[in-house]
Structures are given as C-alpha cells and as structure tokens.
Image 1 (cartoon, rainbow, N blue to C red):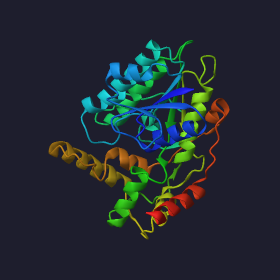
Image 2: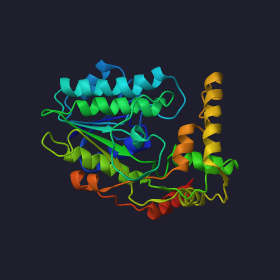
Image 3: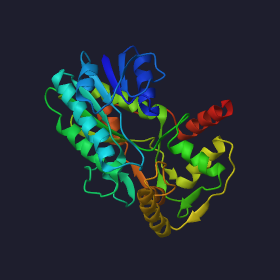
Image 4: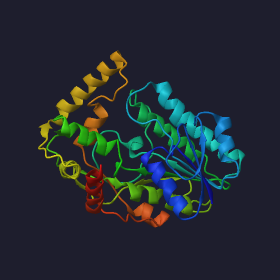
Length: 325
C-alpha cells in the first residue's frame, strides 16, 4: 500500500513508518520537520487542508498520529492541531477516496479520574474544562469515528503509556526527575497500571491498518492497546530508573495532597504563561495514583494483534540503549 503517516517525528509514528517500510509499503510522511526516515516527506501544518489533501493524493491509507501533547498551551492550540488537524485528514481521505484511516487516540479520552480495572474502550468524555489535551483528543476521536462508512474504514487506536528507547515523554521525564532528586510516587505506588512497549504499539497500528475494511468488525470502533501486563507503578518506575543507571527510592505523596498541589501548579503555570511542562498537574496525579489497565481481548480478536515484546524484555532493551548513550 501507499500509506500517509502524519506526525512522523514522534517516537510512535516514526517506528510505525519504519515497520511499513520494512515490509515493503510505500510511505509518505507529513509533519513540520524532517524525520529520520527513508521515505517521501511533506513538510507542513496538519491544520492546512490544502497541504494535507495534496499529501494524501494517491494514498491507499492514512495513519494519523500528528497531535499536540502535554499540558502547556491554550485551548486554541490544542483544538487547532488535534481537532482541526483530524478534520483535515478525514476531509482529505474522503476527497481522495482513501479507503482506510487509523486514528491514533489516547485512553485519556475516557479517563475521568477513577481507577480502571480490566476496562474496555469506553466512549470519549467531553466537557472537561482545562484538560485541553484529553478534551481535544476526545472530540477528534469522535469526529474520526463518525466518518466511518461503506467507503471509508476508520479505526481508532488508543495506545496506553507508550515507552521505549528514545522516549522523551514517559521515560525521559521519569529519568530526568530521578536524577534531579525530584521523583515522587502518588500514594504507595501499589496501583496496577499497564503500559505499551514502543514496538508493540507500532505493530498494533499496522495491524489496525491491515484489518480496516468497511465490512470489518473494527470499522468505526476504538481499541485500547497495551502490553497486557499490569504491574505496580512503583515497580515500573524503578525498572526504568535502573535501566538508566539511576538508583533511587522515591518519596510518597498522598493522592489528595498531590491532586491539590497539581491544581495549584496548573494555576500558577497559567498565570505565568510558562512554556515549560509543569512538574505536577491534577491529571498526572490521577494517572499516578489510580489503577488503569485494560482488557486486551477486543484488539486481539478484531485486529489479530498480539504484543511480542514483554515489559521485562523492553527494560533489557532500554538498559542496552542507555549503555550506548
């Protein structure tokens, strides 16, 4: 197939593009900066409908991963990239008769702060003031899924806490804070969470691409992707720190206190209009203080996908990567 991959400078989209190239697909990448990939690259803004339409011409499928992440920015920033960008991709797919779209979403679209134990891909929740990333991604997923039809197959994939060598989001931040002596656990760190090693997340997007057909069970549905190995968050954090060669015993902060401090930090960051990521937010306190793991069976049944790299193997690969740096 000829596949358009948006946001290919991100860890997940880049690895997905590599898998497609390795198996012989023709890949076109659309992003703002050059990605380290041996593929045709179109540099531009995902919000520019003309540019997206031009990049999509002649493509059989689209993996839409471009997004504004994090917690720094205005609602207009998040809405523009995540919602308007997704709408541009859907419009281009329809105009150019692209048959398949895999939309990269996030489990946070349906997370409202309580624990998730063996959860499914519940419907997105909107109306969360201030949580601009989750809110914009929820609307984007709704719009993408609504485009599913007999001519256009659309599948939404929600990878859960993707990590691996080169990751600057989860791994990078944990290691940076550990080295600075600022790493803390919300609660005791006993809450069970699942994560997704990068190769598994990328292979899930490829599996969704292959499974997406107008008559398939996955058309118009969302799936949460994870390793299927829930572990205490303390064990995962210590494992990542050990891979980076950092020995640490993180202090524990009660969840209620962490949530209150997160709210204060968010307010201070908005008043200062800071451009850096805050050290704590309410959403982060919820993520670190509650269990969240999901039922892997729907993705395995409908997409034919299985994770191939265990958490332990992923940590070994992460250790080797840090040793090379």
